[in-house]
Image 1: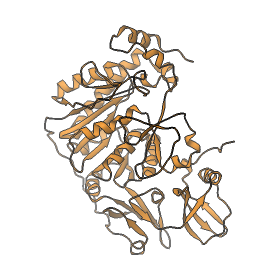
Image 2 (image 1 turned 90 degrees about the vertical axis):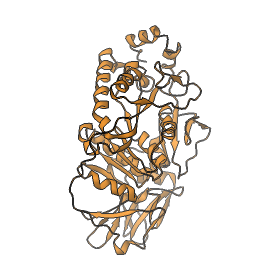
Image 3 (image 1 turned 30 degrees about the horizontal axis):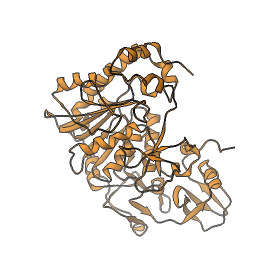
Image 4 (image 1 turned 120 degrees about the vertical axis):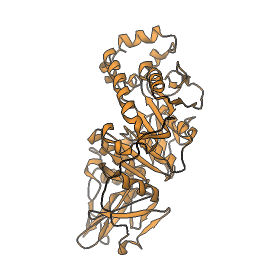
Length: 440
């Protein structure tokens, strides 16, 4: 086992704020936790609830998520327990009935999928990720989560100023020195240094200054890290609050949480709560934003559902459909109206991708596998466990059935789509989503 960095350990020993047994806790195994999808079913034997999370569970042991079809169906999301406290912060804030929410550094999708559940088709969720490859993973996870009002973009913070003065809630999971990762990822111990921690603090300051104009007057910023370094947490926020004349928000207390040194937010120390290590706080913008959004001129897309799809598509909520580049999309009416303001941004995911126009007819897009507010009526092929894994591995099988598209389901939960041709089916599961190896 890699030893804890010497200078980190000494800092903890010299700081009376730091719990005495933190260092010992960092050498113990990290807990495993998941958050259930509120509209789907997944069962974990021996699981215990996470106090601050409606859908969060501690698991008695870490399962193989890769080989669990329910994971691929978006029935749950493996997420660090401390970060699920975002739910409590969200519910504490006084937000509009249809808030505009931006998750600034959203990959791989833990906070974004949680925010999507909390919004429950109210408002709009913009999930941004600066790293292109990670943005594709984020898009995959939000697609599997199945909400219609989620959008994924891939931009630097400096490129988001088309949104100035338009955001009600900004979530900044800041890049940090990663001391809360010391249990789960021992490489984090090798990468840690005082210099790196200082660099992270400077970078956080730059990010906060860059994105602050995105918020409306009265908007909120949720700030979090996975480190215990006060210079990256409460000290960082104190200086920013003073400069911007913002105010801190009182957050609900749960047993084991430790209020920070300046009473701005909470630490989740792993020796006091079952968490890897986490810090979170929320602040409110009280100074008006001088400039509104910069609307860009773009042609209006065609707003209609193709006639041949009307009998196939069933929706549980009000949705706006539009066509662009031979593709059909859908989102909530409010989200669509906001989307039209953001035409200068580049999106990997825009609401629900419903269909693409083929040579002879419209065919279902892969989002329809996981969408729960919009249903494309297709026949179903039910799979056993072994066959489900083979499908997720990208294999095609011999099967005699009527030609056409089918949902592949495992225990009545959709995990993918095929196109039946002759006596075989074509596996349509996206290549980058597939399981690389099957269990031995």
